[in-house]
Length: 155
Image 1 (cartoon, rainbow, N blue to C red):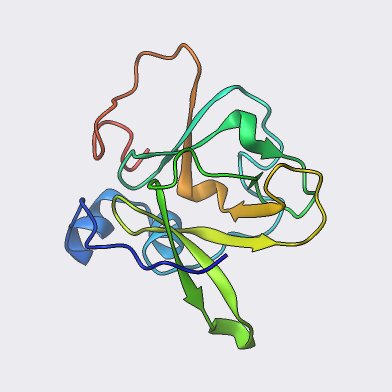
Image 2 (cartoon, rainbow, N blue to C red):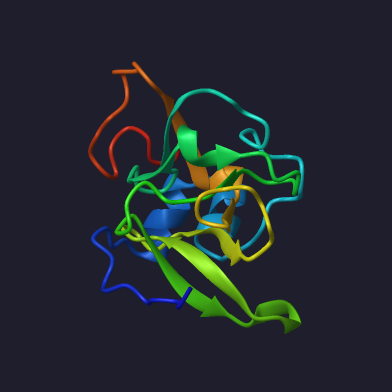
């Protein structure tokens, strides 16, 4: 897996606008590349069928049918919804080399992707994603916006 840096995000806002739309915990993870504590996220053990969207801009990122139990403390997916839904970049923080996962639409931090860990998934990849970076829209839910930056942002 070779990290790819995406082009300019489609959703561009000032840091002041992001701070106004996101609560402090959301901002710390989505915009400042923080990590929520393990086993505290609302989607760690969720089995609801649906689409996981970026909490910052509403872009579709993952489907529930790619979510699997990795027992790592964060929601894990073996593939993003579409290749263009996320961008990857090298992360050398905390004394290690990892691959950061960003929303392709707004470049908000989602988590990291790992490969070669031996999980029985089709891709042998684990997209380890912060729950706070996501909003789950259950299948059949027509009340949410399909437009990035719509009603879901800041939820």
